[in-house]
Image (tube, rainbow, N blue to C red; front, top):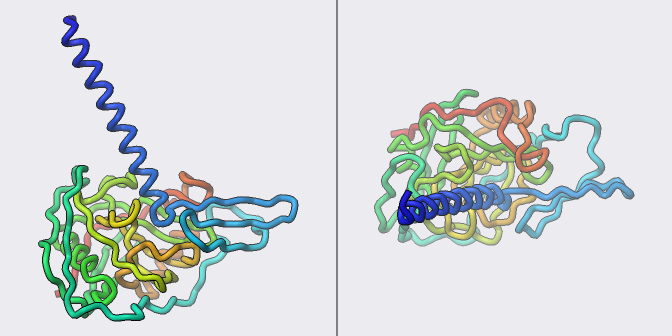
Length: 283
């Protein structure tokens, strides 16, 4: 083997290792995304208090010591729908949207929406036909017009078809189902990003539909559904719609079956798979 060939092989191995480490860092950031997207749990044994702190958030939900039962299942799930998110101050009639190409390749081939003006009003219906039943989404352009435009574009290009909801959290303060990554790795996306559409009074509760991210203005294709408690989330994730009660009851059953722990006992892949077979928008 020539010296030059040996050096080329060493350089190739080094590049592979760097790419693998970068991919793992992206996966971890995305997981810590949803503010999380991880939650740190601390058990104070002496006083018997279970404290859950949302990473990056200001809220520190607290509950009594957990009752007997598996840690990978929710202790309880709120049954009342949360009020649909609303902006205190309405957006202009039209806003400018821009979708910036990223350095990372798309997990599934897709084109970004066209840049330009978009109406900040009206709602759109989307149906996710999944392995647990149909999930009915209402997208609200008055909340997040650029996000709605992006989501409808992805639906129209069948980006979400035959993908898996790769993550579920079942702990107090954070009860969400996360989807939208064709690679199911937690780090995949469409190969472009766009800006946040958030506001300080934004709150998340049962029925809220929002974008996952790995930091400010890193929205792509991953989204999450708050099926229960979202009080541990800070207002850093673009809410762009809601789900109806029958859809949430389907997700409740998945949550009650528990998760396979990956990022702590209450955070991992749902034991009952949730596969999006097709996504379609109402005409």
